[in-house]
Length: 481
Image (cartoon, rainbow, N blue to C red; front, side):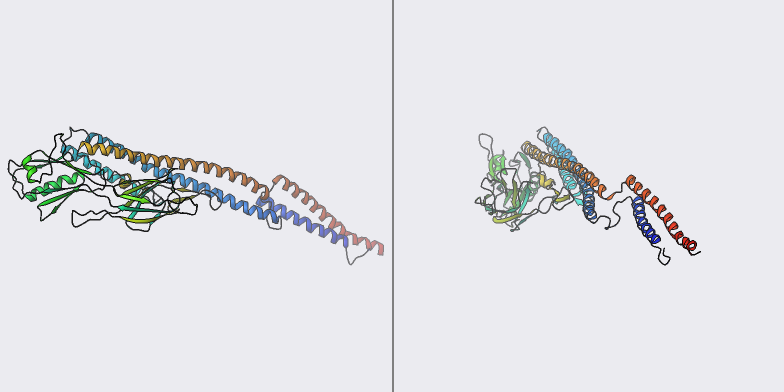
């Protein structure tokens, strides 16, 4: 028996210290609810759980992003719904204007409302926004970079792949054009009558001077999209359509032969009631096609194109469509053609769309592509209501605009359905990964409480044994007595 070193007490103390450490761990786990409270508890489990936690947070954020995408779509849809209402009203007015019981004053009122509605379409396009980002003015469609400033891509379908495309306008488009002789005046009673241009009448009354005739032509023909410019010191006038292409025409009828004579015979009517008719011309163009090699750039071999005025529209299989417009310029001489020719390479980029991050990892995204939907983009910015023919043409144009808006709304509906599916999928993923994370990180309270109780009992036993081991040296006194 030894008194300098009480090995039994030291042994009991060591056990008590170890038990206290276990109790401290259990208390930490029970109080925090976490199984791993330090890397020493489970180094591998901590590494795995950290990655799982990052993925869970990413999935939850992506789910919120998907909801943001749905909000964007619904904001755009609100604007498009109102556009549809406006186009329906415009169509109703065009049908009304196509009825020849309406006189010029009635059509003035119809035209005024049509123009106001077109302005409102552009207003909606420019103001429909989400979080400060405009949605319907073309800001959310893919960027195109022509290397010739005279060219502009006015429409690009979602199915046009990124790359370089080459278009050349070889022959310029032309406006419809007619030249009048303008008498010095004053107009006599025998010469007074009406000039009918595209079924729209301009009255030439007795006593009108050359200036009066110019003013009458300019005021009235401006209503149907034509310009009147003087030539040869005012002795002649050049009337031109504002737009280019073979769809544009000027047909002049002058029933009064005296008036027709002083106007240069431009309004002679044939035996079938037809007047002199001049038409514009569409541009002529070419497109560069690839040879079929995957590394080649350009349109595919199956691509075809059509021209309309100064626009070239290229279509291909799988919904490929691109419309390219070449600019025109104002000429000092009214007899000169302002349309241009030229060649351009157009680079179609992937940038420009609104990208919604719909996953926890890079590359998991949805791109929202919405084309320009203002009045010009829809083709309804210059509708004319002053004759049956113009109003009938306007009905067709509005129908195409309605179809364009419907297509966009359909695509937005598909986007919204996709975002809803993405959201549901993200929540399922998040739930499953959270379960795995919980199995690694979360404390099993029942198990840990059992362990804590066990360690607590051992702690009390260790204390008791330390007390007994410290009493053992006292027995040496009995031996020494």
